Length: 103
Image (cartoon, rainbow, N blue to C red; front, side):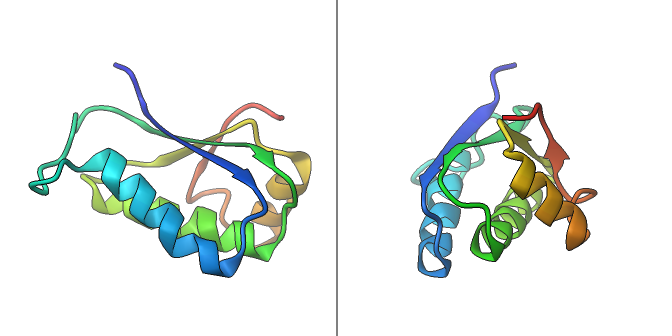
């Protein structure tokens, strides 16, 4: 099964979080609101992010909620920078998302 993939690059700000959530929703649902490929996993590639900070942590948390609302899917992070991994651990979100390989 091919996963649904959202690629996050550049600097993530609090203002960009709603747009990222809308982008993931567009990948998960068609124009009529029907879920696309309910069995597919949800991957989020964060290898191109330039700064791991609390805005990125907020984005990951909210993207995880979007994924869960789409049939109980779990967000799987890919190419996770060590700094983001440490922040997610610090705020207790490592159990909320599936951390993929190190970036």
